[in-house]
Length: 452
Image 1 (cartoon, one colour):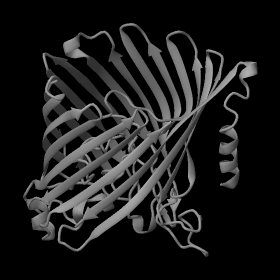
Image 2 (image 1 turned 120 degrees about the vertical axis):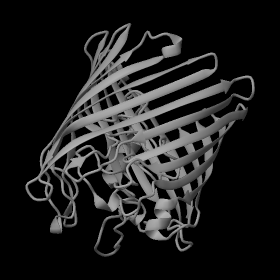
Image 3 (image 1 turned 180 degrees about the horizontal axis):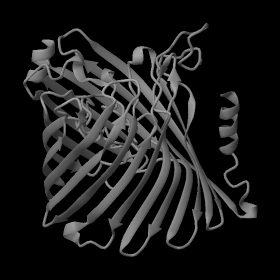
Image 4 (image 1 turned 90 degrees about the horizontal axis):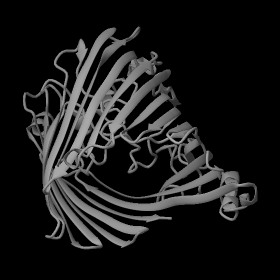
């Protein structure tokens, strides 16, 4: 750790140390501090939490001529007051027994890749990198997260006047062990392509389609086989369209995947997979009235009806924070909701937004999920992600609850802003029936971000 910090310090003083031989060096990064206060997280008046978290990201770029470059991005996360002795979290022996998370107070390589501009239209990237395709509802870097999503592999971009094609081949997941529990499949491989139409008319500004092939080996099992990691072979495909005309804007996303999972240790040993998602939004803007915009959004994704067929949608690498409410209570998977919202810019440096979500289950016989969702890319089911310890098939109700988000952002300079939101969640019939908890939960969030 000390050697790494010393290396970063050296880089800070040698921005153009190799400029003489044609190599250019540049730096960028950001620093974010978040305050979050959650009130009544059990919906029964018994639990609240408060935290202050900081994230520091530092990036470096090396360019050797016009064709070759390399990029490195480091990220460090820390919870204020958690590591006063500067010993990384995750240690279970003296002098500290903090086990809250191995990423706390440890610098992590978030991205490390090389780029070759093979021709005027072809760019090849190899290594570990974040990737966002389309509007992030299929694959997203998830920039809000403490550590962004990243894939290890090769990405090829072919850019033409009328269209752009991105092809990727990656190793997307591999087993790791925390204590005595294995937390992933042995190997997951991903091959995919995204095609975007660049010369669409104004009323159809975005048109893209994508396809991915996922192959996952059967994973290891923890004690008592608590978390099964079956073998999976599936294909994913989807489309995204968006545009605007005369103040009206619209967007629609459709995703679908099919395949099969097999297991040698956990029932069902063979399971068909077939799931889908639709997410659509329509808005109306009045730029002359403080940039006022009103919108309505509808989202629905499939849920499972029988155990022998998994129809519960898995969100792949979608942008979790920007889809489904700022409190982060729900992830996509057996989830249907409608959102109504309005936003405006009272001043050039201030923006405000109000959004209201009405959540429900798509299939009352299936679970709902929170945190990272039902699964990551490799397709296993983790029962601990079940929302609120009881929003499952025990109830014939579908209403999960309603959330209100009020957001204010103040921009001080192009490099510094402060964002705040106040949110409330009122439990619906599902939670009231299964858990007996009916109190309203709330969240206060404040974040400042400095980019450089």
